[in-house]
Image (cartoon, rainbow, N blue to C red; front, side, top):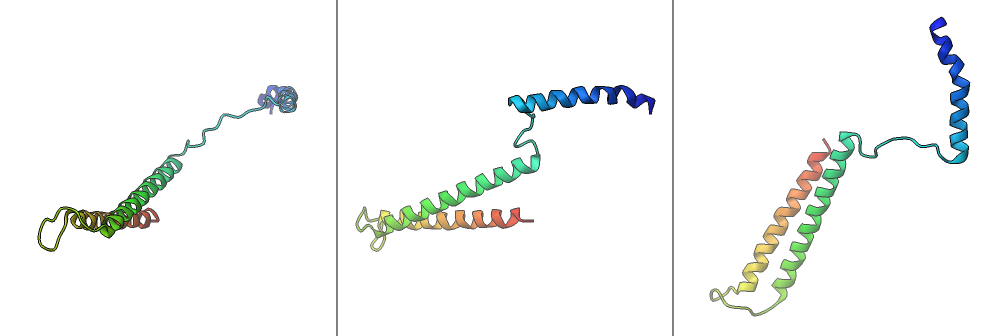
Length: 109
């Protein structure tokens, strides 16, 4: 009990200093928003999933628009360059969408 006596004597002075700082608007704490590794990992996964989804959507839309254009250089009797590029883009968009979906479902574990 005697060991706690100096700390108890300083307590009113510390409380007074804290209340004065709070009243004057100088009270602050030191805390980091992303100090926890779990928070950083969550935001990284969220950003990567969002970017992958946007990339898959943009690739799919580009492929669909390109498929709607007629013409372009003919590679063979029934296939033009635009059709080949559009089918390739649509295939890539499907692969990216499946990758985004699998990463989202895997992150739930």
